Amino acid sequence: MLQNQDLEKLFGSGAEQTTQKQMLLKKIIFIFCITASSLAYTKEYIIGFGSCIDQNYSQPIWASIKDKNVDTFMFLGDNVYGDHPSGDLHKLKKSYLNQSHKLPKWLKNKKVISIWDDHDYGINDGGGDFKNKRESQRLFLDFWDIPNSDIRHSRDGLYFNEFIDIDGFKINLVVLDTRFFRSKLSSDRSPYKPINNPDTTILGDDQWSWFKEALEQKSDLILVLSSIQVLATNHVFEKWGLFPHERSRIISLLDSIQTKSLIISGDRHKGGLYKKESLVELTSSSLNKPTTAARISKTLKYIPKSIRDQLIETDELLTEDIYNYENFGLIKINTQSKEVEISLNDINGDQIFSSKI
Image (cartoon, rainbow, N blue to C red):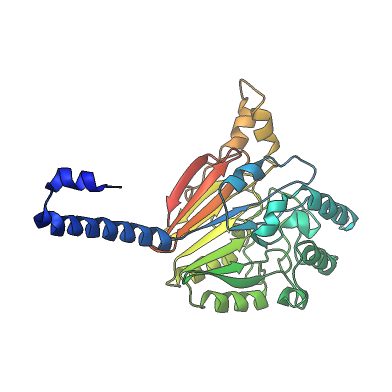
């Protein structure tokens, strides 16, 4: 801070210099106020997200996520591993109990959004023919402490949407259920083949109608949460591409809206960034359960081709190399400039890649 003697060194002494001193002080105060005002109104809202977190494994990644000061965290499915080949839900119930002791306590002070995938649905790669899906839905709602007044307690499926409003910047969260209504896959296990039958579905008629209406609501940013990947095509595991007409439908629908949108997904035990023209999808998987090939590769000085081939993924829509190890996603929103930055981050919190949308 400038003292009187400092001002006198600049301007000398005498009454004739008083006006100049006052003008300088006014300029300093004005600049300070403008800077303080800018800082006060620059709001960054941070959303963290991830998927595939096994209740039987350690979960060190939470320390790095906490350090990012996220305002909201989104679980994109496989939030426990409780599926059983028989479809019995006894294992699922035990898994939820175990996970309740593993998740960090600080999450209770954050906004949490969650959707299921197959391993917390109750059966591997399960779909609409799963016999215990309604009981599984009840277990999910109980574990995530969803209020009884929520519509998910009174209708089939876990799809829903809600808004986050940060200083007038409105985020439309559109959360899809890719399990409850999904038609049968081409076989009982991967590798799966695409089904070119227009009568098959991922979302079902009611959810499709709801989805279209949800996207039409006014907002500054639409976040579409899908447990399985939408854009990826060049792998034989679960994805929207197994039902090509459904993939085309969701892409056309998202392309038709004017609002900035982003798809986030999980499931793959890999992280990747996909772009199709203006459409962007960030996959974050997994929080603590990388593939067997990835885990083995960490222990080897030389990685044999059989392992190396499993770590490489080629897809014409991939914009960055696929990431095979523990990771989480971040969405940073500057509500003043309305800039949105997305990134994938490793177990230590270091950024793997980022992009603005």
